[in-house]
Image (cartoon, rainbow, N blue to C red; front, side, top):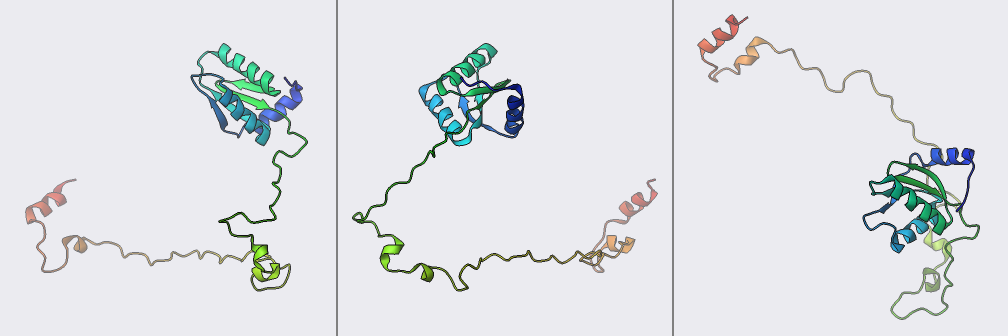
Length: 181
């Protein structure tokens, strides 16, 4: 298990604040597959959050200790059901390139370079070394302070009655509306 100073721990807690849990420890506890996932994520990210669904704090402390001991990681923080772990990245690259085959495999198309195309013919028109993106962004038109659509005319009492020739509400209803304060 790695040990870190309080200043390093404080910096790691600040870096981990915005992270989401990447591994969840469920009802079966620390199984080999859970440990493997934690190891894979530590290798990829260095600093991870793990969510443990145990309700007992002592069990979560024990899980944190087991994870750190088995995976050579440092405990950063245990807050609620979240465990924050850190392990420095390996100095050697994790993924190694596969050697390319000289003979094509049956059923597969040969790579583009083997089909006789030249590297310059694949690119579109333009000068060599020219990028496709514009060097400066386009300027936006300023918004006009006036509204885009003209304002509607104010409604009048006549528009409530409707167009001519269409029967309106009974007169008694009209009178009730006018008398009500």
